[in-house]
Amino acid sequence: MPELVEVETVRRALEPVLHGARITAAAVMHPRTARRNERPDDVAERLVGRRVTAVDRHGKFLLCPLDEDLLWVIHLGMSGRVTVVTPESPVERHTRFRSATDRGDEIRLVDPRTFGFVAVFTPEEAKRSSLAKLGPDALTALPPTRLLARTLEGRRAPIKALLLDQRVLAGLGNIYADEVLHRAGIDPLRAGGDLDVADVERLRRSIRPVLEEGLRHGGTSLDDLAYLLPDGRAGEFLTRLRVYGREDQPCLRCGTPIIRRVVAGRSTYSCPSCQR
Image (tube, rainbow, N blue to C red; front, top):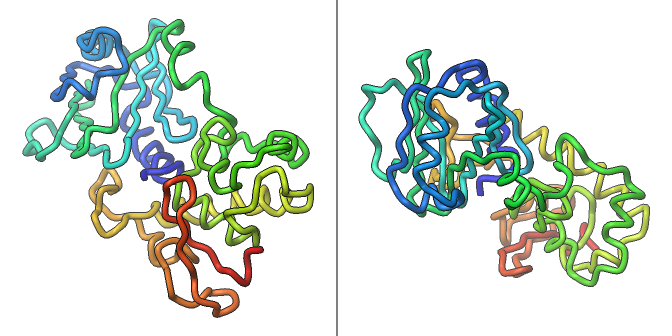
Protein backbone atom coordinates (compact mmCIF):
# COMPACT_ATOMS: atom_id res chain seq x y z
CA MET A 1 0.00 0.00 0.00
CA PRO A 2 -0.26 2.30 -1.98
CA GLU A 3 -0.87 0.06 -5.01
CA LEU A 4 -1.37 0.71 -8.71
CA VAL A 5 -4.76 2.35 -8.22
CA GLU A 6 -3.49 4.82 -5.65
CA VAL A 7 -0.36 5.64 -7.65
CA GLU A 8 -2.38 6.14 -10.82
CA THR A 9 -4.74 8.42 -8.91
CA VAL A 10 -1.73 10.45 -7.78
CA ARG A 11 -0.35 10.50 -11.33
CA ARG A 12 -3.60 11.90 -12.70
CA ALA A 13 -3.57 14.62 -10.07
CA LEU A 14 0.07 15.49 -10.72
CA GLU A 15 -0.08 15.53 -14.51
CA PRO A 16 -1.64 18.98 -14.92
CA VAL A 17 0.67 20.35 -12.21
CA LEU A 18 3.97 18.91 -13.46
CA HIS A 19 3.69 18.26 -17.19
CA GLY A 20 5.70 20.99 -18.89
CA ALA A 21 6.76 22.61 -15.62
CA ARG A 22 10.38 23.40 -14.79
CA ILE A 23 11.80 22.39 -11.41
CA THR A 24 13.22 25.47 -9.73
CA ALA A 25 14.22 24.00 -6.35
CA ALA A 26 14.53 20.57 -4.75
CA ALA A 27 15.60 19.26 -1.36
CA VAL A 28 15.92 15.76 0.09
CA MET A 29 15.10 15.96 3.78
CA HIS A 30 15.97 12.39 4.84
CA PRO A 31 18.98 10.44 3.52
CA ARG A 32 17.03 7.20 3.02
CA THR A 33 14.74 8.93 0.57
CA ALA A 34 17.62 9.36 -1.91
CA ARG A 35 19.12 5.91 -1.35
CA ARG A 36 18.52 4.66 -4.91
CA ASN A 37 21.02 7.12 -6.36
CA GLU A 38 24.70 6.36 -5.87
CA ARG A 39 25.19 9.99 -4.84
CA PRO A 40 22.22 11.25 -2.82
CA ASP A 41 23.05 14.79 -3.93
CA ASP A 42 22.29 13.72 -7.51
CA VAL A 43 18.55 13.92 -6.83
CA ALA A 44 18.40 17.67 -6.20
CA GLU A 45 21.29 18.53 -8.52
CA ARG A 46 19.75 16.71 -11.47
CA LEU A 47 16.21 17.99 -10.86
CA VAL A 48 16.81 21.70 -10.55
CA GLY A 49 16.51 23.49 -13.89
CA ARG A 50 15.02 20.48 -15.71
CA ARG A 51 11.61 20.50 -17.38
CA VAL A 52 9.14 17.65 -16.85
CA THR A 53 8.22 16.29 -20.28
CA ALA A 54 5.61 13.71 -19.14
CA VAL A 55 4.01 12.26 -16.02
CA ASP A 56 3.84 8.49 -16.43
CA ARG A 57 3.53 5.38 -14.30
CA HIS A 58 4.62 1.73 -14.44
CA GLY A 59 3.19 -0.50 -11.75
CA LYS A 60 3.61 1.33 -8.45
CA PHE A 61 6.28 3.73 -9.75
CA LEU A 62 5.65 7.33 -10.77
CA LEU A 63 7.91 8.14 -13.73
CA CYS A 64 8.56 11.71 -14.86
CA PRO A 65 10.91 11.98 -17.85
CA LEU A 66 12.94 15.18 -17.79
CA ASP A 67 14.76 17.01 -20.52
CA GLU A 68 18.40 16.03 -21.02
CA ASP A 69 17.31 12.36 -20.95
CA LEU A 70 16.91 12.01 -17.19
CA LEU A 71 14.15 10.12 -15.39
CA TRP A 72 12.61 11.30 -12.12
CA VAL A 73 11.20 8.34 -10.17
CA ILE A 74 8.95 8.45 -7.12
CA HIS A 75 7.93 5.35 -5.19
CA LEU A 76 5.53 5.73 -2.27
CA GLY A 77 6.64 2.61 -0.39
CA MET A 78 4.33 1.50 2.41
CA SER A 79 3.29 4.84 3.85
CA GLY A 80 4.24 7.57 1.39
CA ARG A 81 1.91 10.16 -0.08
CA VAL A 82 2.45 13.11 -2.38
CA THR A 83 1.03 16.55 -1.63
CA VAL A 84 0.72 19.59 -3.88
CA VAL A 85 0.89 22.82 -1.89
CA THR A 86 2.24 26.35 -2.07
CA PRO A 87 5.80 26.98 -0.87
CA GLU A 88 4.43 28.90 2.13
CA SER A 89 2.38 25.94 3.40
CA PRO A 90 3.51 24.52 6.76
CA VAL A 91 5.83 21.56 6.39
CA GLU A 92 4.14 18.42 7.66
CA ARG A 93 5.91 16.05 9.99
CA HIS A 94 7.63 13.24 8.08
CA THR A 95 8.11 15.35 4.94
CA ARG A 96 11.08 13.71 3.23
CA PHE A 97 11.33 15.58 -0.06
CA ARG A 98 10.31 18.96 -1.50
CA SER A 99 10.44 20.32 -5.03
CA ALA A 100 9.17 23.63 -6.44
CA THR A 101 8.15 24.49 -9.99
CA ASP A 102 8.12 27.64 -12.07
CA ARG A 103 4.33 27.60 -11.80
CA GLY A 104 4.44 28.28 -8.08
CA ASP A 105 3.53 24.77 -6.91
CA GLU A 106 5.47 22.68 -4.43
CA ILE A 107 5.39 18.88 -4.58
CA ARG A 108 6.24 17.12 -1.34
CA LEU A 109 6.68 13.49 -0.33
CA VAL A 110 5.41 12.70 3.18
CA ASP A 111 6.63 9.25 4.24
CA PRO A 112 6.59 8.30 7.95
CA ARG A 113 8.26 4.89 7.48
CA THR A 114 10.79 6.02 4.82
CA PHE A 115 10.17 2.93 2.67
CA GLY A 116 9.49 5.18 -0.31
CA PHE A 117 12.15 6.92 -2.36
CA VAL A 118 12.88 9.62 -4.89
CA ALA A 119 15.53 9.08 -7.56
CA VAL A 120 16.76 10.75 -10.74
CA PHE A 121 18.34 8.27 -13.13
CA THR A 122 20.35 8.46 -16.30
CA PRO A 123 19.25 5.92 -18.96
CA GLU A 124 22.07 3.58 -17.93
CA GLU A 125 21.12 3.81 -14.24
CA ALA A 126 17.47 3.14 -15.05
CA LYS A 127 18.45 -0.04 -16.90
CA ARG A 128 20.30 -1.26 -13.79
CA SER A 129 17.46 -0.36 -11.42
CA SER A 130 14.45 -2.33 -10.24
CA LEU A 131 12.43 -0.68 -13.00
CA ALA A 132 14.07 -2.99 -15.52
CA LYS A 133 12.71 -6.05 -13.70
CA LEU A 134 9.06 -5.02 -13.75
CA GLY A 135 6.54 -7.12 -15.62
CA PRO A 136 3.81 -5.64 -17.83
CA ASP A 137 1.60 -3.03 -16.21
CA ALA A 138 -1.60 -4.59 -14.86
CA LEU A 139 -3.77 -1.71 -16.12
CA THR A 140 -2.23 -0.52 -19.36
CA ALA A 141 -0.37 -3.57 -20.70
CA LEU A 142 -2.25 -6.63 -19.45
CA PRO A 143 -0.99 -9.65 -21.43
CA PRO A 144 -3.36 -11.79 -23.49
CA THR A 145 -4.79 -14.80 -21.70
CA ARG A 146 -2.54 -17.39 -23.35
CA LEU A 147 0.61 -15.37 -22.67
CA LEU A 148 -0.40 -14.92 -19.03
CA ALA A 149 -1.14 -18.65 -18.82
CA ARG A 150 2.35 -19.43 -20.14
CA THR A 151 3.84 -17.12 -17.51
CA LEU A 152 2.04 -19.10 -14.78
CA GLU A 153 2.70 -22.51 -16.31
CA GLY A 154 4.56 -24.84 -13.97
CA ARG A 155 4.57 -22.37 -11.08
CA ARG A 156 3.92 -24.03 -7.71
CA ALA A 157 3.61 -20.79 -5.76
CA PRO A 158 0.07 -19.75 -4.76
CA ILE A 159 -1.62 -17.55 -7.32
CA LYS A 160 -1.95 -14.80 -4.70
CA ALA A 161 1.83 -14.76 -4.25
CA LEU A 162 2.34 -14.67 -8.01
CA LEU A 163 0.00 -11.70 -8.38
CA LEU A 164 2.09 -9.88 -5.79
CA ASP A 165 5.28 -10.64 -7.76
CA GLN A 166 5.94 -7.43 -9.69
CA ARG A 167 7.91 -9.41 -12.28
CA VAL A 168 4.71 -11.23 -13.28
CA LEU A 169 2.40 -8.20 -13.36
CA ALA A 170 3.37 -4.75 -12.18
CA GLY A 171 1.05 -2.87 -9.88
CA LEU A 172 -1.12 -5.35 -8.01
CA GLY A 173 -0.69 -5.44 -4.24
CA ASN A 174 -2.40 -7.09 -1.32
CA ILE A 175 -5.76 -5.32 -1.48
CA TYR A 176 -6.43 -5.50 -5.19
CA ALA A 177 -5.06 -9.03 -5.61
CA ASP A 178 -7.65 -10.25 -3.08
CA GLU A 179 -10.40 -8.33 -4.87
CA VAL A 180 -9.37 -9.69 -8.28
CA LEU A 181 -9.26 -13.29 -7.06
CA HIS A 182 -12.69 -12.99 -5.46
CA ARG A 183 -14.20 -11.57 -8.64
CA ALA A 184 -12.56 -14.39 -10.63
CA GLY A 185 -13.73 -17.09 -8.19
CA ILE A 186 -10.21 -18.44 -7.60
CA ASP A 187 -8.83 -19.59 -4.25
CA PRO A 188 -5.73 -17.52 -3.38
CA LEU A 189 -3.86 -20.67 -2.32
CA ARG A 190 -4.23 -22.48 -5.65
CA ALA A 191 -0.88 -23.00 -7.34
CA GLY A 192 -0.47 -20.71 -10.31
CA GLY A 193 0.46 -23.62 -12.53
CA ASP A 194 -2.79 -25.42 -11.67
CA LEU A 195 -4.92 -22.76 -13.35
CA ASP A 196 -6.21 -23.80 -16.76
CA VAL A 197 -6.83 -21.41 -19.63
CA ALA A 198 -10.44 -20.82 -18.52
CA ASP A 199 -9.24 -19.94 -15.00
CA VAL A 200 -6.63 -17.54 -16.37
CA GLU A 201 -9.22 -15.94 -18.64
CA ARG A 202 -11.49 -15.29 -15.64
CA LEU A 203 -8.52 -13.92 -13.74
CA ARG A 204 -7.46 -11.65 -16.58
CA ARG A 205 -11.01 -10.40 -17.17
CA SER A 206 -11.31 -9.51 -13.48
CA ILE A 207 -8.20 -7.33 -13.22
CA ARG A 208 -9.20 -4.27 -15.23
CA PRO A 209 -12.74 -3.90 -13.76
CA VAL A 210 -11.38 -4.03 -10.21
CA LEU A 211 -8.67 -1.48 -10.95
CA GLU A 212 -11.03 0.83 -12.84
CA GLU A 213 -13.60 0.69 -10.04
CA GLY A 214 -10.88 1.59 -7.55
CA LEU A 215 -9.83 4.51 -9.75
CA ARG A 216 -13.38 5.83 -9.98
CA HIS A 217 -13.45 6.11 -6.20
CA GLY A 218 -9.98 7.60 -5.73
CA GLY A 219 -8.30 4.46 -4.37
CA THR A 220 -8.38 2.91 -0.92
CA SER A 221 -7.58 4.95 2.17
CA LEU A 222 -7.38 2.62 5.16
CA ASP A 223 -8.10 3.69 8.72
CA ASP A 224 -4.52 4.91 9.21
CA LEU A 225 -4.98 7.39 6.32
CA ALA A 226 -1.42 6.65 5.17
CA TYR A 227 -2.69 7.16 1.62
CA LEU A 228 -4.45 10.39 0.72
CA LEU A 229 -4.93 12.12 -2.61
CA PRO A 230 -2.55 15.03 -3.30
CA ASP A 231 -5.30 17.50 -2.33
CA GLY A 232 -5.72 15.81 1.07
CA ARG A 233 -8.94 13.91 0.37
CA ALA A 234 -9.27 10.24 1.31
CA GLY A 235 -9.87 7.59 -1.32
CA GLU A 236 -13.36 6.12 -0.99
CA PHE A 237 -12.93 2.56 -2.30
CA LEU A 238 -12.62 1.09 1.21
CA THR A 239 -16.41 0.88 1.63
CA ARG A 240 -16.73 -0.97 -1.69
CA LEU A 241 -14.20 -3.75 -1.08
CA ARG A 242 -15.77 -7.18 -1.46
CA VAL A 243 -13.37 -9.27 0.62
CA TYR A 244 -10.27 -7.39 1.79
CA GLY A 245 -10.44 -6.63 5.52
CA ARG A 246 -13.90 -8.24 5.85
CA GLU A 247 -13.02 -11.31 7.94
CA ASP A 248 -16.17 -13.02 9.35
CA GLN A 249 -18.45 -10.66 7.42
CA PRO A 250 -20.80 -12.19 4.83
CA CYS A 251 -19.63 -12.56 1.25
CA LEU A 252 -21.50 -10.01 -0.83
CA ARG A 253 -22.09 -12.68 -3.48
CA CYS A 254 -23.20 -15.75 -1.49
CA GLY A 255 -23.38 -14.76 2.20
CA THR A 256 -20.66 -17.17 3.40
CA PRO A 257 -18.39 -15.57 6.04
CA ILE A 258 -15.14 -14.25 4.62
CA ILE A 259 -12.03 -15.99 5.95
CA ARG A 260 -8.54 -14.68 6.56
CA ARG A 261 -5.39 -16.68 5.83
CA VAL A 262 -1.73 -15.75 5.39
CA VAL A 263 -0.20 -16.10 1.92
CA ALA A 264 3.35 -14.98 1.19
CA GLY A 265 3.42 -13.32 4.59
CA ARG A 266 0.37 -11.18 3.80
CA SER A 267 -3.14 -11.26 5.27
CA THR A 268 -5.36 -12.70 2.55
CA TYR A 269 -9.15 -12.55 2.49
CA SER A 270 -11.41 -14.80 0.46
CA CYS A 271 -14.78 -16.56 0.35
CA PRO A 272 -14.46 -20.33 0.88
CA SER A 273 -17.63 -20.94 -1.15
CA CYS A 274 -17.12 -18.63 -4.12
CA GLN A 275 -13.39 -19.20 -4.49
CA ARG A 276 -12.34 -22.76 -5.13
